[in-house]
Length: 323
Ligand SMILES: [Ca+2]
Ligand SMILES: [Ca+2]
Ligand SMILES: [Ca+2]
Image 1 (cartoon, protein in one colour):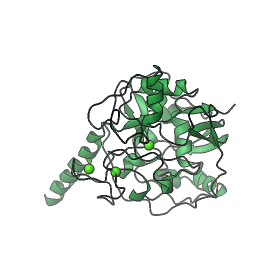
Image 2 (cartoon, protein in one colour; image 1 turned 90 degrees about the vertical axis):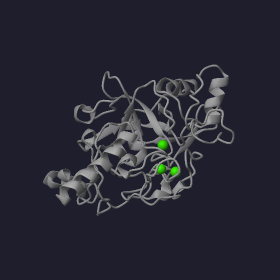
Image 3 (cartoon, rainbow, N blue to C red; image 1 turned 135 degrees about the horizontal axis):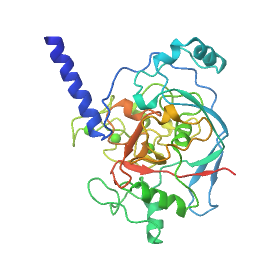
Image 4 (tube, protein in one colour; image 1 turned 180 degrees about the vertical axis):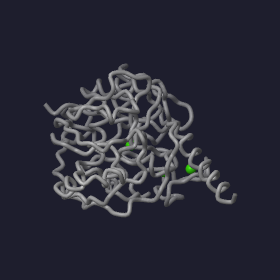
């Protein structure tokens, strides 16, 4: 009876985590993977500014090629062919992500043409230029929205819906990244669980490390990262992705161009996939300052929301083709 009661309490706890993030799935929170794969030499990071001088925002070139998309669960490692492929790729065949969610399966190989992606989340100051030009509607102002708040110019713009995010990117000659582009920029080619590697570290990004508004915390809190809501973009250099892209775990969840489909990783194409043909909700990636469980902050984690929702832990960055 004691065991049943304990299990029930654990289940309630898990449900409260996922319900708060509005991403409907029951959380499966387990320990970190025991083995980390070798971290390959960092790729050459090529930054540029586009349009030249227009916004002063650096873009990072993500070279053409394959990467591993989705979540590498223990089942993947039980297949001998997969283990052999891992050895050929110089990856540790023993490594597995124990927090895989249903919609992150399977772990699969995807080719992307070269593209550029913003090094940082779009800031309040940059979005304000577009709003002043009459090309971007004002963000929301309720809750922990940054719009109209003093001293937040270098913080990510939040409380923008999917259409506002797209409008800003278009105004700067760019577009929202696809889910695949976002994921490759966040984890590199070797399937990292977090942008920096395979072990969670609360010092490498802005996560839920406060107890003022609610009692929940990311492992390692309280006051681990020092920000109760958003942080200035690029503040956590140790959280950079293999390509040098910042805040790909935490700060704000990021809208991407795709419709969300829970079977998308099963039904996808292997070259430049751009998501399901239709849907009702749009995908968001990377977790945010309000994320209080590590599974939400993994590079393969897929969030979704109504495209009209202006979440105060939602923001975005832009991308463009490298042609
Ligand atoms: Ca909290
Ligand atoms: Ca924080
Ligand atoms: Ca982010």
